[in-house]
Length: 531
Ligand SMILES: [Zn+2]
Image: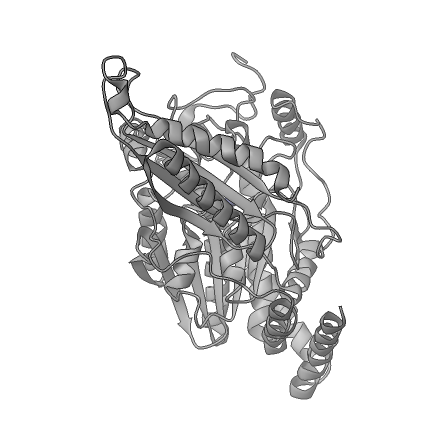
């Protein structure tokens, strides 16, 4: 507590003294305000681009590690706009980094790009309607974050060129975030080595930022494969060693073990291979676990218990077990100086003006999903500090980035509140005016925050001071990846190959249609079937 106060005071002192010394009272602030107006107009001027990017990535609907169309589209666009792009990085063919400018500060803008299995859904209609049945879809809204960042970066780049401001803009994607499978590898590859600050945008149903440890967990995602011996399940069962039984014993062991775990843990599994057919004793079987906990120590501890139970299950069935880490996520810690800077801009931009039609539509979708029917929020959230008693919940591998550079999250208002999450209902708004307006609002905040960071070096210093003197003093990050763990880029390859030919017919063609809704023939808002 004491350290935090000291750091905050120091940042405050630096903030108030530096501009005065350089420019005389007020003049620097006036310049910053002029620049903010200028980047805000720059974002407004790119409203069409924001919509096209959001809709295009929505129509690609690509699963973790298979974001090939998305990455090609985004990197081509960035190259056309003067960014230098490095592709196929950190062992992931769909990962990339784009840079423009020179010198410090290096501001890294990130956002996720992958989607979810079976979440395919027509946007703008308040009922279940798949475009391609069974296909993946943007049931979280990861189609919108790169539009937020890129539009903001282009507006800021324009200002930097005009005003000859020094600094580097770096744009990078969260690959395979839905598998917690990308960012730790990007960190390990040194992508963030020289970065001064990271601004991360994530779709939300309100407008907010936060500092400190948010609600949620970190985790290890690991698949255990048991190997036994096949035999005729009726004729010679005594000749077999049953790998599926090992999976079942492991799951029973883990489930009984839950009683001895801290209430904050979250763990879940799916059986990824349960054998081939009943009359063959399964020689191979696999189960995939997520072990989530609140801090590094407990994440590692539960992962080790899992390993022990797996070994025990193998011993009981005379099978062999191997394991493969599929992903990891460090617990998150967001930067106070960056969050406070961003919040001022969120307050200034405010919520988009929602129309009555958008509100009616949002309530119809909430009714459809059995959520509270309170429509779209009209006011932004206050700045969130660390929870007094942190609550358990989901994970995001931005946590890994947050331990190598001062990092902040912005949640922009592109989706509808009170939906289940990781669900087709969460895709409904994501290529409609609701998403588009949220993207533009988010983009303005990103651009204004970049102006602050480019113009006020004391903010970068304040962010670094918080990072080293508060965050790293409070908790020491631990390595969750072993050196031998590699991105599992083959995941989802078959699924995507199966659906892509049909999905391709529905890719958004911005040269022919004003919006993706137009292309699909959806009249927005459509509240009921056959309306
Ligand atoms: Zn996400």
